[in-house]
Image 1 (cartoon, one colour):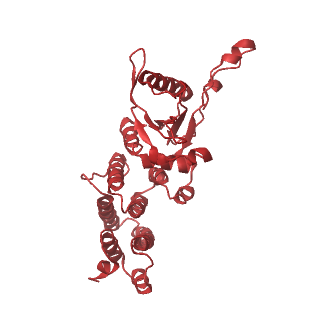
Image 2: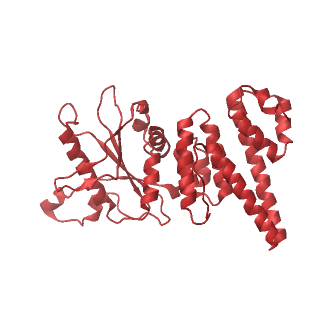
Length: 328
């Protein structure tokens, strides 16, 4: 993973709600799911070992367990290419973290060390084949030596192991991140932005966080060749994507190359976009105002895309349902 991409992921997972959704959506463990994630606290992630080598690449959280601080640290190492010796790296990182906890006096009340869950979040295209336990990197040895072979595992979460259908079934922010990473075009990105706008209707902080992350990711993607101004909200991203998609569509048609085919594809995309925007608007209205009257449902069903997009924008801040449709 490039340093820029790595930093953008750290930006996302420096938010407790993303950490909670990662655990609840992608780690199948009832005990972990039972913890109170309202108690999540981010802790310092810089460790200095005895040879003065500093670690600043980790995101570490702690969560309260059983009514008292029995530290559970979540160490997330972001990786986009397969590292054969990842198990060794994790063993070193966990050792440095324990060393730092001891220096700070943050051990359990009986002096024992707190449990650590090491997580590797992988988003590369190649299948992950590396060992997930340091013991698997060391051959078996007869006799006494075998008893002292180190053992330490990490939990692998492979983004590409999940289909879009599986991810779409989860009402989960991390699933939305994975879908964005797997997206095959700006139309898909636009649909995900519309979905996030509905989910984060009352969360200005998360809307801004995702807007910043999506902007950076789009500009980093050479396939799009896109430059976006600074943004503060997902709605700005949605508007800019609509403008860019429309510009591309008009340019393709003007070129006249395979015009019939392109117009057919464009029509299909616009029809799909129309249906997606209509469903997003209905969901947003239901969330904000409750059951939608039948006449409003019919109005939306028969409205052009431009009207639906206009109503969607109004619905973000409207005080009552009638305000959305008053000028139409």
